[in-house]
Image (tube, rainbow, N blue to C red):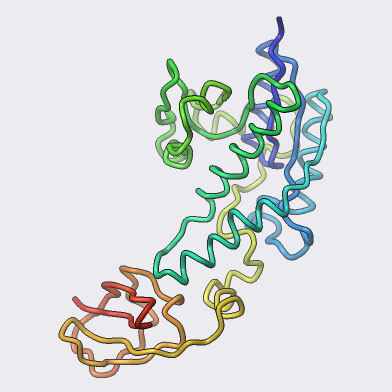
Length: 267
């Protein structure tokens, strides 16, 4: 029996080639693109985005070239709950989150897989640069593009329904293959940065969500050496933008204490 495979297509070159390889492997493939914002215009565009209107159009064109059915799934509500709200809550708790990791875990794999299985698909195919051998996750042969750390949170049961066609090749090889297949995304730049912060101002985004909350910046001895407008604007290890008074040496953020609203710095 031919496996029914749902190919998650972001609009980038990796997911397009992964879908094409799945078809070539003999699977019955359907493409799907995730709409992650109720207002996609508010998300980053071009090289800096991954879930914009132009990305959905690129994904649809790739599906047409490959010759597979294509759908768009609205997951804006799940994305806001599991990624955006989690992002804000983590900063409020004094931690620095990785929203792209959370998105891959909760949305681009878990939510997609659950819906795919409910619809009768056997597996989900993605363009992640990672290998799957005997049910175990392994790094991609392209160390610079390896994404095994992003999917390391997946369970054995989830991996049993996963197909990762790109783990055995480099990004350059993927782009060359896309060009040979006539995919217009062959030269499309990789997405990066936080897609739901359109202007790239993370501190401003958090301040709009959490408000201004001034507090002290203290050194390792407990002496006040500065003031901040919100502890959520800092991350452990940060050196730039501290605006400390009378600091003779470089100082880094050592800890963030949200209860007392204190940022502690030191060498």
